Image (cartoon, rainbow, N blue to C red; front, side, top):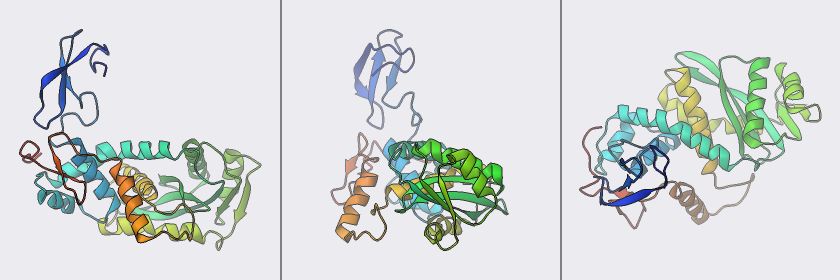
Length: 292
């Protein structure tokens, strides 16, 4: 690995490790020491990287408050406050969103269903633009304070940037902003359909983010909502066991696919044991920490 300070390739591994078990290195060029997490967003964390990532995943995926997540990890031997959970979500949720968007680039279908739903932010209703393809796979999510032409154009531009290809057909409701936005942003060759019944697919898909945000009683700020909603949708789509509508997936396959989806991003941290039943890291004496 190159030196995170001077980018020199002359790195030598040291015999000692950090308190959490991460390897340490010394640069022969600048004489500075570093560890595996130096220069990454996970540097200076007082818990293993895997634990911080798992906290964010559970916070996004399940109907848990900040205090619920902190209490659940307290039983595992990791002590941190609910404000730490909020800070980790703010820092790492955008990284998760960007990584999952990059994984599904070019894999979305050519028939899109677009609609917007309401999300309460600081006591006021905002518009969450969402799009899925004909098989229910996520296309894009964007929060907006307005429901007009400019918001629709921004949404379609973000969708094009995410998936990397224009659709053949777009189905929306009867809002006046969509025809021109589709024509000017996606191209004149894209067929635009307007039907409330044909768009029941995306209407039903809104239930995911609506059910997740309901226990939160809305969001405190626009930035928090714009960060949380796309991250939740990306993780929900990543853990979705079906690749097309009405696909029959057995319970055993659902467990295997779900374990593989989350297990690839969470590995056992250095200095931690792993439980055979769950594969999640268990804290050893070196991993336990006090309040963060």
